Amino acid sequence: MKKKHFQLFLVAVPMFAMFLFTGCSDESSDSSGEDPKTEEETPKEPLVDRDPQVKEYFKVLNEMINEYLTVGETTLDIAEKLDQGDLNLLDAATATAELIEAMESIEELNESLTQQGTIKENIEKNLNAKDMLEFKDMYSESMARMDSISKRIEEIDWESYIEGVDLF
Image 1 (cartoon, rainbow, N blue to C red):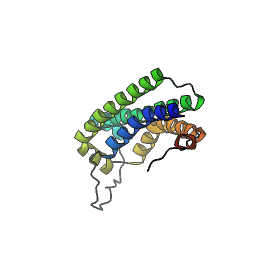
Image 2: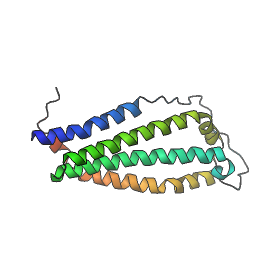
Image 3: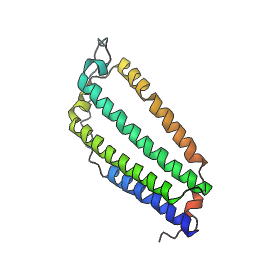
Image 4: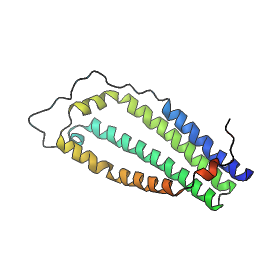
């Protein structure tokens, strides 16, 4: 039973570090209360095609979403191997290295998005219905991955990991 807790510890520490890192990121919210400007005439080209900076912003945002999803999938792979008793030290070390690499990538992408902060405000001001449909299409693959991850999460017996653990 101690080996299972140690293996869970190897999984939990990188995940805790990732959540701590991302939870401490500095995001300012716009609380001005102003409604986005609506235009009577909608442009023919989608916003991503109208502005190359917007295209770059969404490219970085997509990469960041994919990294978060990869972290989720890696963690689930570890948990499934742990459930089946197939997790060995090499698997744990490999997964930990993958999680650390993903966290570093997320940090770089987050910094890039922070540097592009004014682009986000411009995007919000210039959205139209066609843009919303395009964004829906852009993120449909990510949403499918999120759905797959959530189904896998439901299949894992999380209570078996915390059984017998004295946190206090």
